[in-house]
Structure formats: structure tokens, C-alpha cells
Image (cartoon, rainbow, N blue to C red; front, side, top):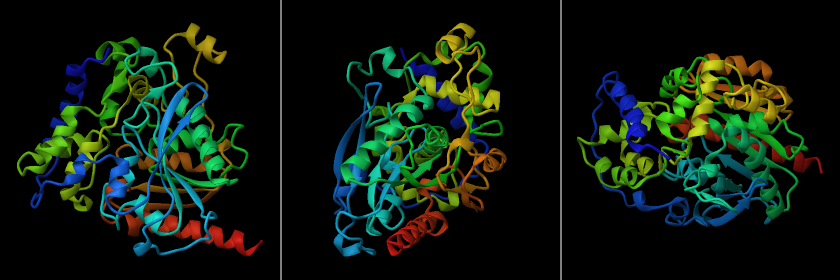
Length: 414
């Protein structure tokens, strides 16, 4: 059972820490925005974009909710591919996030809209347990068993299920994958498994995360409590961590729209990894908070805390040699091997990222077998990858350009 008072105590501690360590920037012009009431599909259709809702079953019983943008708006379409022959791309969100993260800024600043207007068939993924993926064939979110997973299961079950489903619906053999934060973590583990027989044409890694030994994110505060493992479960319970609740939605719809209270909302966002005041469109903060945090399992957070402690890219440690032996056939959790991923990979990182720390990113790069290119954004923090106003110039346009160039090479050779 979740203990909300202790859960939010962690949030408030992180908020307070940030409040007293961050300069007080000017905040003006924050007004009520009707988009705080909208889900991902409504954000799309309100701007004239087509949207399809899809439900994707996993082999272990979860049902994931995906949104599809099959094409852009006619009036803003920049690139055209033959009908039913568009390049397909899957965008996968980060920790405590959801598919709405690709749609929350203005149309000319959000990756989902930009890709659709550039002729791509865009699919927005949602990992198990978040706002859009709270279904299971036999379990309910009220069942503790529903929450017995971490990003290991996302890599082993969610990722292949989404990729195979999308390829089947679109009748394609390959797609492009862009992961952000946790979305890179499940790719650096999952894309190296036998199911990926060249199904992913190129992997774009935003704020890549594998090891977490050098992070300064609030997640680090939890690391001392993972031994014994039961300590964190006694604090937070064994189910859901920071779900999208009525309280959070109220913050987005009411408090975040009022000057003088918006600092609360900014510090809720900070829990996700810090952000850059200079590149944050403060008029969009109510929309961000209305959708974030989007929830995950306590076990997933424990796994992240273990990663801070172990400083290695390991599977979940059950805290018992006997349980590890039964699950893994060894008394300690095995390591994921990022070098098994053969997919061409482009890495984008931020020089001031608190979660995908530059030291950890630099340690990852030699492990990437097929590293095509890297790009580091000066001054960028973790949330800039989805919300920075200069994200198109810094990163998004580069991704879209690489996709077009790859398609041109392949189509001209046939």
C-alpha cells in the first residue's frame, strides 16, 4: 500500500532543497491555459493533428496505451513521402513521464508535431504503470502484484511488444527509435536481446542513462536506504510511486497559473531532474505539471537507487541471494551489456544534466558498438530535452535531418 504522506515528504524535501539553492528568476505572464485539461490525444486533435489510440499487449499481461500521429497537418506539412510508405518512428519517454511530454510545448517546439510535419509516421510510447498504461489482462492497479516490475521488464516486454506491434500495423520491417532518459535505458538493454533482429534502423539516445554513479538528482537521496531493501518498501509501500493524482492536476489547473504560486510547480518539476530557467517557457508550466509526474512503480525507483549504489548497469537486485538465485540462477543480479546493441546509435547529452551526468555518459560511450555520432548541448539539463525552447535548433532538427538522409540513401539505392 502506498504511503502518500511519506511519498510526498520526499518530494517536498527535494523541492525545499531546490528552493533554497536556486536564484529567483522573474516570473511574468503565466495565465490559465485550457490545455491543462487535455490528455495526449486531445493535445494533438486540438491543434488539427490526426491521432489514433492503440492498445499493445505484452507477453506478461500488461496492456500499453500508445498514440499514433500518422501524418502532419496539411497546412504545415514540410516533407512528403509516398502514402503508406512514410518512415516510422517510436518516441519513448523518460522516468515518471508519459507520451504527452512530446506534445506540451508549442507546435514549432515539440518533437511530436515537428516529426509529423516532416512526413514521419510518429508513434508515442507509454511504459507500464504510467497514466496511459494502467491495464493488465488479469491484474488491477490496486493489486500489489501489478507493480512488481522495474525497467528490466520494460526492456524485456514493453519495448519488443511496442516495436513488433508498430511494425505489424504499418507493414514495415524497420522503424526509428528515439528514447529519452529511461527510454534510452530500456533500449541499451532491450535492443541487445534476441528479439531485435535488425528491427530498429537507428537509435537516437536523448540524455542516455545506464549507470548512475555520478548523478546529483534527488534519486540519489534514496540510495542509502536500499540496504536492506525492505527499508524503502517500508517507507513508500510496494505499489505506485508519484502517480498522476488529482492533487497534481489541481496544481496544473489552478496553482501553477497564479503568479506567486508557480514556484511550487517549478519545484515539482525539479524532482524529475532539474531544469534550465533560461530555456523554460514558463507559460507552459501548468501544462507540464498537469501531466507530470505520470507514475511508475516503487520497485522501479528502488532499481534506480540500486544503480546509484552499485554504479553498474545491473538488473534488479531482489535483496536476497536465494531470490536472486531463483530468478537469475546466480546470487547477484546479472549485468546488462550495452555493447550487445548493434543498432546505429546517435547520442545527445547535456553538459549540466543531473540525471544523465556527463561522467556517466562518457563512461557509456565506449560501450556503444555502433556509435554514429555524439552531440553535447552546453548548459542543458535533463528536462531541456523535452521542454527547452531551443530544443529544435539544438537537437530535434538534427534527428529529423538524419532520418531524411538515411531514407534518401536507402530509397536512392533501390
